[in-house]
Image 1: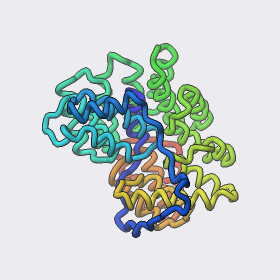
Image 2: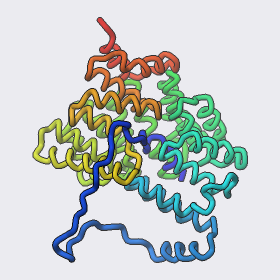
Image 3: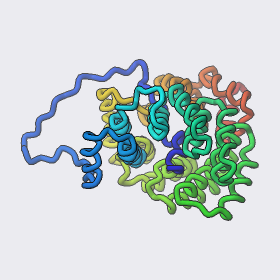
Length: 387
């Protein structure tokens, strides 16, 4: 689980519904043909079904944890928050306990982090690392939560607890070092460790993506592209690496290549919004369909009461719908929830679209406090300032 949990902060975006959006009444649809296929669901393994039946009878926490992990794997694969609900349902006998079994505590924290219940997730993780100080996944998830919520001292503490695994520790610390203004040193350390460390595919892909992110901060998009393509060789279904490579291609004016990279992956919301953006830029015949599909995803999530990704919604409003004022509002709400570089860049870009330097003030203040140096941010913030 190291790879998926270590990337948890990158694979989950802002998760609060914008305050001015309300779900409209759902329209009932009845197919005319009783044989019509409405949707397809993945086939379930017979052993998993048997385990679910056994869980109903035994309420065994170990079985519940095994099944919940499968649902979390599906969440990371399909980027569908309903799998988080399924995982939570499996853990329901222990969900409200103050002191659930340690494995349940880790999964509860992971689910809470994924839906951005950061305070509750952090409390679970603090308790867990006190119980199991050598739990790698607990420290990684704690570092993610701390970084997203700008508690960089706690993030560094958790990464430091992984010193026995130097590559994992360096990859964990990379975003914290980058935000502290030490992107080059972090890159050099990680680039030296990776080729001489034997590790599993999950950690290797995670480290390659971290190198790419540091390269982007340093303004070296060619280097970032190399690392991201290597990460996709390791795992072609790494949606975060694929999305980041799309961003590099789009930033370097290769929209057609960016679209090709995401072809057939519309089921992932974070990739769908990007595909809608590139096809809109290309003025393709498919642009309208993709934009409509993204609007349907947003509406469907609102109707279900699911929390939608504010980062993606703001980006869609900014780039496809060209509703700059709305994009600023959503980007601000997103910044209130999480403070990763992607969120900072988004708010600055939205502020630039409405030519309102004051809207970017929270990010500019954050940059001063952290000492972060990011080539993309530096250029946009400089353009926002009066000449």
